[in-house]
Image 1 (tube, rainbow, N blue to C red):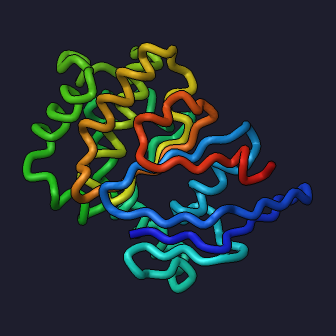
Image 2 (cartoon, rainbow, N blue to C red):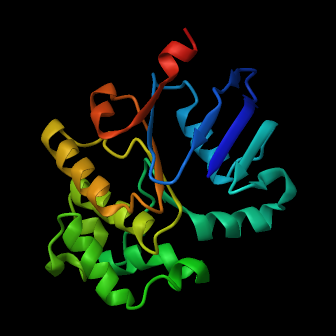
Length: 219
């Protein structure tokens, strides 16, 4: 489904990162672990098409990112990629249900996979361990753990082909991390979707079938 080959990124302050090759198929769960500042978030941004390629190629179902304009990449990302941001990027004054629905607002493709939006929001909320009573509450009133679940539901709604997750458990304790990961892995469709998660926490490796350790890559 996804190939990322020969990627390099040069930062303005002079640092250069050469990334390992990545190939991922539908159903695969890939963890990229490594120390802070090793380029994990940059790699996700490149795969999402949010950062311009400087070297190398990314192909998604055979489509090369280099053939698409920035506008087309933005739409491609909306249609095919669900992103769980490290900073969550939730809209604080919107309700839980409104935040989750944003996942299909800019993609007719993902929206077409949802026969009943309200029912799908309720299903995701339930499967991710949130109470239905929280649906109308502004997300600013939720705990960090609850907000993480809202961010995950927004990424999962409409069944995008690829889920990207940037340190989604960084603010969670050990028990909450396990519960959150169990819920996400049970909710994502292993027949049609793939997930790439980056984390500095190597202890979550058992939840994934493939692990790339940036610490070893840059040793």
